[in-house]
Image 1 (cartoon, rainbow over the protein chains, first blue to last red):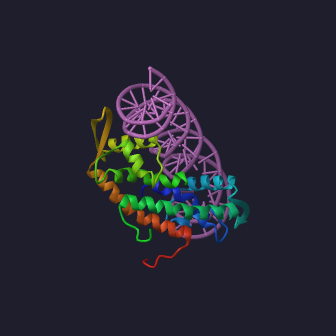
Image 2: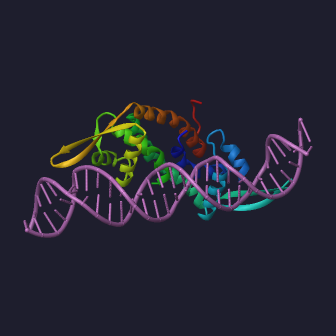
Length: 106
Length: 106
DNA sequence: GCGTGATACATCGTATCACGAGGCATTAAA
DNA sequence: TTTAATGCCTCGTGATACGATGTATCACGC
């Protein structure tokens, strides 16, 4: 799959993965795997970025002797997902331009 | 609009713009404008890249005293558009993961 | 004749960012 | 005791979109 095509989905995808329930890095990757293959280094980079942007908060917890960092989505993160949905309308318009397919709804 | 989201569309979009008829830089930008705002520097970078990848060929012509470089799509370019369409199926699966929308077809 | 905007091309430097390669530690299975 | 799974992290590199900037022609208004 074209890397460039994935780029725009990554942030929103990570946020979606923790939207309904707090999760941690290792699990997020496994949950996304069927849809999107993301390397660990990429995920942790993104998690740092989203934290810096206040879109999520982190809580460290011990689980069976191993460290886990649980990520919790915050208001700006939810807003980010909504913005993604808005942007998607424009993306679909571009998609139609590329594929020359007509949209009966517009 | 999120820049990252646009990235994967750029190459395919430029190829689509010259698919039916040879075109030149300035016109390509104007044609895409309603769908996608691309800066000139970005376009010329992309055209160079696509040329290097043999996806298109260039022909220089003079038009009313001004230079014009017409771009013509080649077989690999057409193939690239088809690959884009294939990739899009995966992209839509990711989109559904993000928006939690169910697809009745799968 | 002179400025301005449209037409048309190009280059360079910068910032962003995904990812591979590596590293560290624990637990369980082989 | 080696391997795989779990769980985290950093660093360097390459790709790349874009703003800034530059060059040149033509048409138009003043």
